[in-house]
Image (tube, rainbow, N blue to C red; front, side, top):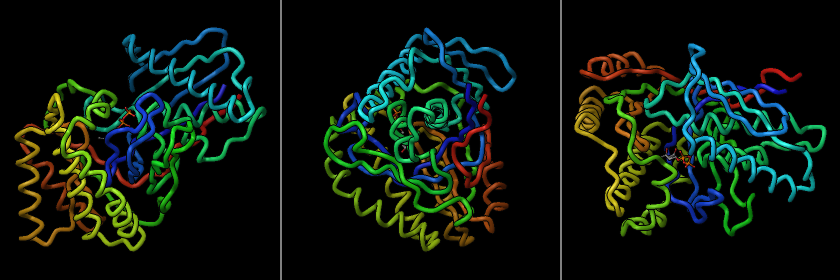
Length: 336
Ligand code: DP6
């Protein structure tokens, strides 16, 4: 058995839409920061029949929905196909048992699927290491089969998911842009509502192409990806702020103009955005906002602004606040 640990990431250039939904091959590159918390721990072991159990932070077993189990099944299936392609068809001989222990509160707007599938990919790689030694890019491909953004949580610090082209299973994979010691940024997370979202990312990605704005978005992505990577490499916060906010708002524009329309943001989100824009001008506070598929606002800032941003976050009525910073990515905990 092997046990691994992983954390979510927050994207500055968002992944939205696939060129191949089945294989989760993205339509464009994306770029994110891996967070140091909250984490999931996953144990995997060989068995005859597939089983998945999930527990929360207090060790209470969570009832798995049928479609969640199906997602793990499909993931294992794709992993086996990929290993066959790599010449290690029998590396996972029969099946696996997976035990997930998640410390990620549900519905806080942090992609738990990214942490979960990065963790499983890391654990699978260790489980099969006598049959085949996988490198990080290959492990990220396995993570991507379960959740596109998971490919970015394999490495620590700042990671990109390179879209690639064509329909080969491994044509898209994750790469590290800079490690976690390069630039310490905080993610102060403001959660306006605890409601479970109605349309998850997987279904959402499939709708991207129905938006008349989507083609325009895709044209902008190479420039944004480059600007974002440069901003990170040169620790240029203002540049990062401009490109991250532009990209997040643009993704929501695509979502809102797709059929059916996806409206993830709410009044609280817009109020927080307005406040952030104001304090940035009045107080010259280095802080940026970014939103994924939900109303949660991620306030990203360098260390010198963290106290002020924290205060601002806690002054938001009716919101829960979580805090994370640049983290080190998926890693192994134990092998027996
Ligand atoms: C809006 O990776 O969650 O958070 O592959 O269906 O699991 P699946 O999608 P997922 O999509 C992430 C969408 C996003 C933007 C991002 O994190 O890049």
